[in-house]
Image (cartoon, rainbow, N blue to C red; front, side, top):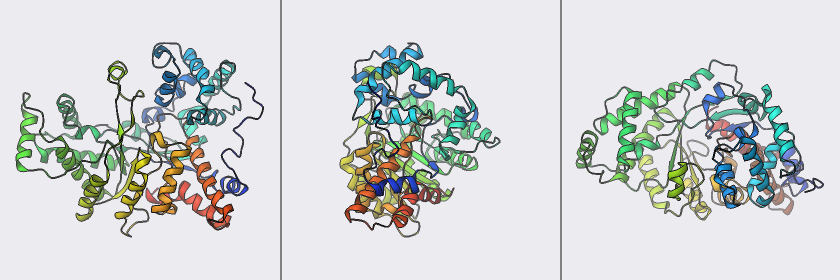
Length: 470
């Protein structure tokens, strides 16, 4: 496979001279605020160096795992006990066949930046690329903190369970790390009452972390409030929730409160009769806590998880068996956000959609609850998960532009577990500049590069910096 006419030029995805100028003069150099990701704070605090390219690039990357399974790669070479170099070579053999999938772009963007490799990855080039990258990974510039500095990441928002002691975040505050690493409060487990065994086990963890004995709803709320206070003291200003849909109801009767107390105390109690109402009640209470603290709350909605039960049992969750769901979100979003608004307890909120069929609805729903108190108070979040590619990002930007105000958008995030995922911000910025540049040249937007360039910079960086008070 020839490397002549290598596709990843400086003007990649930029189809007009105006788009090129917008990207190179306004977007490219802007710092990154990565306000939602799944990077391990322990690895940042330790300033970890990775032993090889497989460890930093393939382990935990369910996007690549899904592609490899589709292409007939044995699981031993994906999540199994094969040698790291063999796993890398297996991935390299797949890359030429991933054309038109975002993995083809991401793979070569991540090799080019930060490693400087401008070759196609395939079976022929795999060994040399693997050795080259491994040598670089042994240097200080390619440690976790070194990579964050290289990509000009000003802030990392990790995803943390309420029971976490946040010791690594606290340790980072005492170091010379140039990136601000802040925890985010992710209380999904406390909403999952349908699985009794896991829920009761988690309540025990929450009791230990909070110092509260949880015997009823009030003591549960007390425990959660203590953890919110603890997180706030450690610098947390963001909560995050991964839900199929927002709960349909948030009212909780005296009878349900009694049932919940019995559910906690009696190991032989029947399954809780109204898990959705329980989740709604707890989530409403949490959102009121966030509002009092001035936090931003995020809702990632619409994915259907763990579809392949056979492989879930074998490999566990987050291994590549989740997909887009077709839930009905409009009513639940409306009722829940309105309930908070009526209580004057609706804090800054970002709603993320995993199904492009719902883009316009999400954009319209966000506009219902902007009240003039904060610019872009309710945000329709960036293309998420299966949508963080060219088509998905363009659809999200177009829906937001048409129904909302794109100039107030807080922009891209990685939502990734990899320290090599930051070229996704570059990807987004190129798509954004190409959209604006095309419309400027066609006469749909003013051909004023300074004016449009300032809006590009707001979307890439300035709006997020203001929104998250960084």
